[in-house]
Length: 269
Image (cartoon, rainbow, N blue to C red; front, side, top):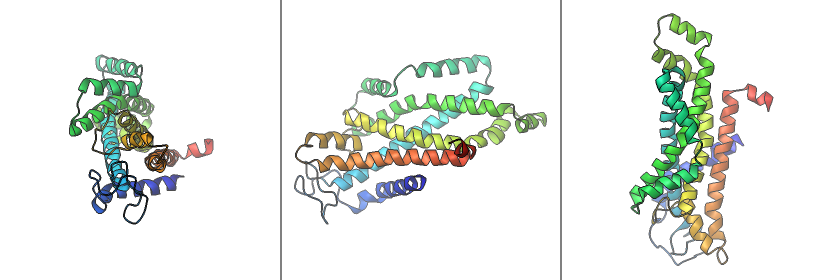
């Protein structure tokens, strides 16, 4: 499953990078509506005569781009606040931890919907920024909790105490001795979180409040194909299949990276 996840994600990234350049335009009508699969249209056309494969490829670019951007922002904020939650003074540490706990009281998707509703834009570029901002705001608390727990376990380890006894500053000890040990677990958890972010973005687009048309998104493609599900069910299969396999692959990759970073977990499992 680990190697399946790597292989499928490699294909998705490759298609996202070069797919829109070697196929038809994902925005324009290039054939008759609901054209069948064939040499001209690999996955057929949608209700407006647009190439489904081209739209899936461009949607992969959108979903992966939003997911990676949101996860990067969550890691920067989460690692910083998680570390301050252990090494910071009380007047910084306590508010950070209480605010992080308060963020868990709000359901992620509902909070994202609220933020997008306040943003209230129909501009295509701004809709992508609104999705990134809303998902980033809801993604960092889990990273803070993970980093804080891991940093706390290393804070009093012998090699960290020895570094401080030799005169190393707290910043040096954290960046050189503590955070490098968290790379494996953070990378593994990030893959699983990335799957959740992509799924959340697709859900927002499915509801019509995420990425705005004519920019294709897997969620909006599913919503549009749902309207013609009775007469053309195959058009609903493609975006659902790609989204599902991407989510599965990221979870398989995260589980594999977790096992590699902590070999003892293999024995426990």
